Length: 468
Image 1 (spheres, rainbow, N blue to C red):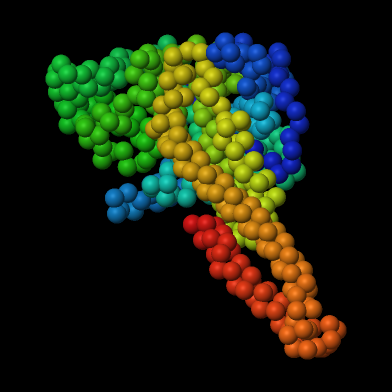
Image 2: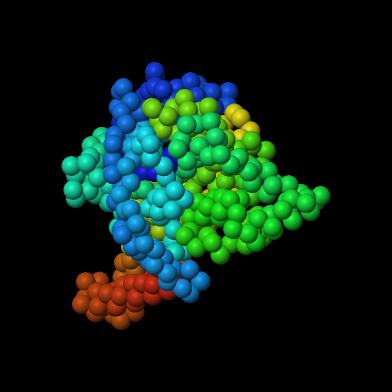
């Protein structure tokens, strides 16, 4: 059994409706069970399937007949002998209570009697990742929604083609993916029916990392030197985990690094690699229970959705801060609004670790660390401080401008009060033209001095802060 979940993030331009928890959803018992006590009431998010009753949509995946990937200065071509894959699609979503935003889960599974090879899975990973090999598969793989759909659509068009309830101006963005593989011999899949027992390569890899794992390490080296089933299995897993087609170049040391689990205490292999969460196990009750409704285990896609949600909040905040800092003529009100919006995305809306069980808690924390999410948020918080400093400078600017106007008015009043003194010095009448000329010259000189001081002060600091 294999499932690939594509996570699409909504980016609505308008406000979203209030959050209503989807009571009675097939997610409900598992979702609430996942949450720690303090986050069960009210829950921070709620998930539901797109169709009631659940609907498996038959689709065709059309790969290009050949494509080029780039690796270590080479540009090999890969030919696809059978470019059509018969698959099925299940749709669900998770809506977050704090802001009402939603992440869609499009789960692709093989049709009954079909299988996904490691190349199928890697090509699907390249829909949202695969930057290192630059295949361009995102713009080449097409999805046909039924056997009569000759044109198909790109993955970016899939949510609208499926008729999902989206806002008029919103095209959800494909961000990440979750892969789940069940590799036990008792699942009834054609690929699992073999006379040769499946060697447990993950146990060997785990033992080879231990201090007394010399025997396992030597067994791994022997496998990697031979064209044996264990080597082919390890290479396939390495390709799936890294999302690269050049996995045959991986040696035993690289295999150990690549197949090191993110959460070692789990009975299954769990790994977060860049944009992908991968689970490989002999069996998984959550996946089997939800196979015909969700298509994948909720215990995988919900922690991943929480990670994606937080990362999206940071991206939104950074865009708003950068736009405000780049606008050198921004008014104080606009800067304050940008600061408030970014601060809410980075603090009030940002999810802590809400999960109850050690596996999901560990995946959430590890995802923050290994994907660089915490480091990215720290960097954006520093930019938020920069925006706060910019606001203080503009406030000082406005305050100084007000003080300058008051000083000018007081100076003018003072000049008017010496009108009689000027007239007496020159022996003029108080309303003599010379008196008014002297007063005008004095006012002009005063204005020039104040303007010169004003121009050499805060405006330059504002420009420097905005460009920094």
